[in-house]
Image (cartoon, rainbow, N blue to C red):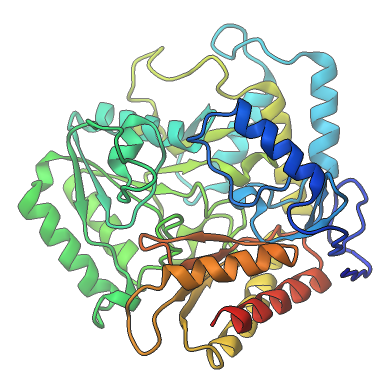
Length: 453
């Protein structure tokens, strides 16, 4: 049994003890029984990283049905940055729930939708006039950003990048680079999608950001043609592709090329947005002001909500009725978003993300000096990854990444893997995680490397 407790001045939520506590093996007997039911009832194509069934969650912990309390380094894939059941999220949702759950904003609107759009217009980069529209998921936001860019430019071609991930719908599968598990057997895909090389410093042979941008732009000019490009769509830090942080200067050069050629520069901030990288949005690190920004994940404290925000003239290009959806901007999700943003501002979670990132980077860099499999530690703020390589090479080692993840899971630490090659561990703790849990989680990870290297 492992039991570590301490005071918790940061974490909100339902007052759960902020501790790692193992009372059974992982998964425990009740989770195993539920897993059998899951297998019989849920489609096999829906995967599960760690088959423990969660009963309660808050702050930096997940408590399963067997009473195990796990340290959460995943945040539901960067969703519960303010923690599960954050007080402002819960109170606002409860109030909205008692009033009404749905009208459809396109039929009879409500002020929560407008308030969220006002907040997005205020928080996203740039002081130009903006408009926003709300949807249900990141993939929907990306699809609508492409629709908006095409309507504005009267062009069709969309440029995306190696290692990109943008979703699981037909169009966003086409935009996504990785075949398995996202695209395999699901084609044919949407046309007029073109892929350019990403700035990936570990694998670029020494290219700086400007050189990597010239390489990408050369591909766009030759294979697509500047006059054909509706938009360039990019994650400022790639998520599923391996937390790839482009070299400085890469994003600004692409944004400038778009301005020079009448294309729309779209920043997919679905995983990076809402304080995760130490700024409200990752583009801010280099002062990049996108034409359109897509958001989801951390926007609403765990409820499904997404948005597209951008320059008013671009956002207003589609005809009336061309944007929307039955559940887009659901009133409960809007209430949750307002509570999440309130929490981020009141607790200064941008600064907290920087603090978490500094701690993780320092500890992981020290581990890299002891474990040859660690090829690179990278990321920004509380979005940090470790790329694992076969010792003495740049060859990806997916097997050791899987082994380290399994070892962490067995010891009550939730970690995720990612990357085109499946060899990257990604760490996304809630921004309200207390210091003692962060430290303990990194110690568990250290021991997992020792056991798996």
